Length: 299
Image (tube, rainbow, N blue to C red):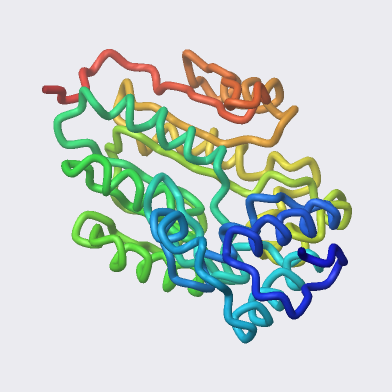
């Protein structure tokens, strides 16, 4: 029988038992139980299928010690993605670092909306602003083989990592990585879609964020100015000039910002402005269109 204590005993557990105990420890520390599996798969370089196949095998003591070290980092607030160095986004593995915002699940829903709009476009031209890790650009290029994507960021470090991620996911032939402060260095126009997850946290709220965000995501990717709306004003004002007539804008927003951002867009003559909920029911996305009757080239 296993001696039930907070620390692991000399008893050689199998991987199923180890994972169960680790999950309980993470819950007790206020973390997600699912993180225990992700860290175990990372340590073993396993797929979920591998875990199901080999989970009854005994765990070597050295492995158990290494696993405990990973769990310790997690209980201390280090995000799983910072421990493993990667995050799955829309089915694609994205390398992350302290230089970029860790991809979030809600951003996948923004990508899904944009891809749905692109289904009827013959050769869609997409502009990804504040690309960070490149996750949005990569997912779009990988899912729509006819898409040509321009991905912009002001950070050299972010762009280097994004290009590396594009190479890893075999899509760099259809993505142009460009350093620019939003539209300032962009000469190309006539995009069908602009998509962005810009910084949207008000400056004075950053200090109150969870430690996993404020300590491990770069401030450059978080700080949206005094009211969190700085980048939305810039995008609303200039973005309409870079879209084809009838083109669409897709934005991720902070919960509670929908009404303000919709007002900003309408004041800049965008039409069909919609504030949309994520799967949790929170207002996290805005879609808007550029006025005009010119037809976008479709199938």
